[in-house]
Image 1 (cartoon, rainbow, N blue to C red):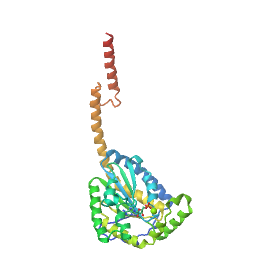
Image 2 (cartoon, rainbow, N blue to C red):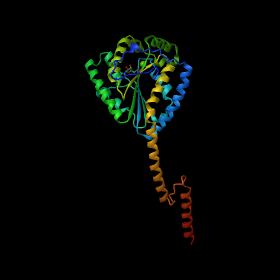
Image 3 (cartoon, protein in one colour):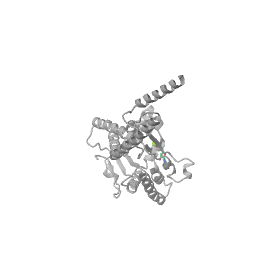
Image 4 (tube, rainbow, N blue to C red):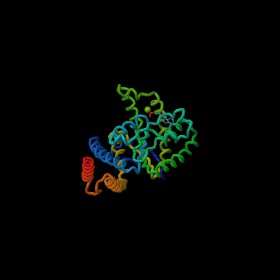
Length: 306
Ligand code: AMP
Ligand code: MG
C-alpha cells in the first residue's frame, strides 16, 4: 500500500526511515475523491458486518498531541452508522482503574460481535507515557508487551479484526498545529500546557514508539504507521487500510446472511401455516395467508349468525 507502513513483526521499527510529509504523489483533491469512494465502501461493509454478527473491528489510534487522532475519527469514521460503532477515549486511569490490571478497562471497551470499536489512545499508553515519565519500570513495561500480544491474540481468536494506527507527524508540524490552536477560539478547549511539556520529550517518545511497534506488531494485529503531516493523506490512508482489512470477510458475511435468510424464510413459512395460511413459498407478503384467515373468520361469523 502506498505510504502506509505495515510493520512486520520481525523487523525493528525505525521512524527516521519514514517521511511524515509523504503524500503518495496525490493531491488533496484526488485524495478526497478517493476517500469518498472508500467511505461508501466502508458504509456497506459495516452494515454487512453488523448483520452477519460474526466479526468485529477494533481500530486503535495513537500519536503525539495534535497528531490527528480526533480528526481522523471525525473524518473517516463518519462513514459508519453510529448505532454499530463505539468510540472510547482513554485518559489518565481513574482511582478505580488503577486498582486493576492495565488491560481491565481496555477489555471492557472491546467491541462486541458486529460492532466497530474505535480507541482514541489505548492500552499502548501503558507502555508509552508511563515509560517516558518513568512511572512504571522498564522491566514491567517489557513484560506488558507479552500481555498485550496475548490479549490481542485472544481478541483475534474471538473474531476481532484489529488495526493499530500510529499517526506520525513531525516535530515542526506539531509546533505549527499547537500555535494554530492558540489563534482559533473554537479550539481553546484543546489548549494545554502539558502538550508543550510533553513536546520537550519528543525524542524519548519517538524511541519508545519504535520499541513498542517493534515488539507488538503481529501478523493479525499489525501496527500501521501513517504519514500524517497532510491531514487529507492521513484520512485516505487510514480509510484505505480499514477497507482493505475488512473486505476479505465480505464473502463469508454474505454467505452467512443468505444461510440465515433461508432459515428465517422456512420459519416464516411454518408461522404462516399456524396462522391458517397454506405456507406456500410464493406468498412473500402473506397475502394468501391473510386471505385464508379472512375466509376462516367469515366462516366463523356465518356460524355465529346461524
Ligand atoms: P487527551 O487524549 O489529549 O485528552 O489526553 C489524555 C491524556 O491521558 C494523555 O496525556 C495521555 O497520555 C493520558 N493517558 C491515557 N492513558 C493513560 C495511562 N494508561 N496512563 C497514564 N496516562 C494516560
Ligand atoms: Mg491532548
